[in-house]
Image 1 (cartoon, rainbow, N blue to C red):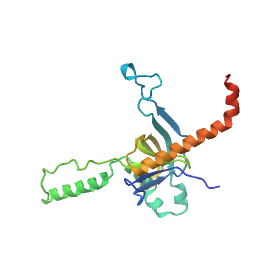
Image 2: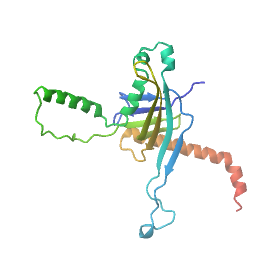
Image 3: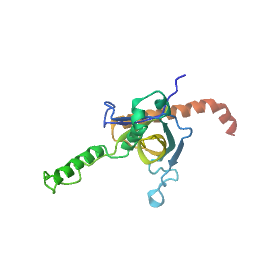
Image 4: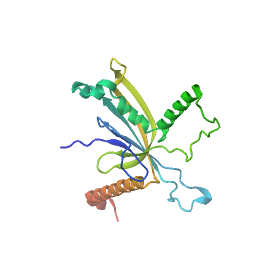
Length: 220
């Protein structure tokens, strides 16, 4: 039986390829906590019925991902021997910064070097890029029925072991993901619709399994 692995995939605005960043979980988390925050319902003159809905509930997913270079080191993997699990951690960290953040850092470094040697340009250039930067668009894949557009709310990296060059070779990463309730791009919209349809289908299957019990419970 094939073991499916969870993953985080960063993608471009309206298409999946080319994929700029992918992190496949080396070990699937043992537990996954889903918190659904229900916004306050309308009250007072703005509320016509007690069952009137307010804003869309927001789902947050919490889990801890584990990474280890042990197997790769045992097999002589050159990347693991050189950098440990640094590439996996760097790929995860990249998902919390604006899309061109790394490129801007390189540009600023080059500008600083140019200024230092007298090749700097006009200092009056605006620092805010136009158009404004956007955070990466990410899909959280967890099995066949959950393909969700998410934003990373928080990330806590605990590096637990290092090699002789101080490269991390074991770490755990605690993540909180916020499911996008109204994504603006086509991929996000399609992924959310797919996951919602899968959830509706499972709810119907549950009804089919419990219909006899439900009939006995209802006294009329």
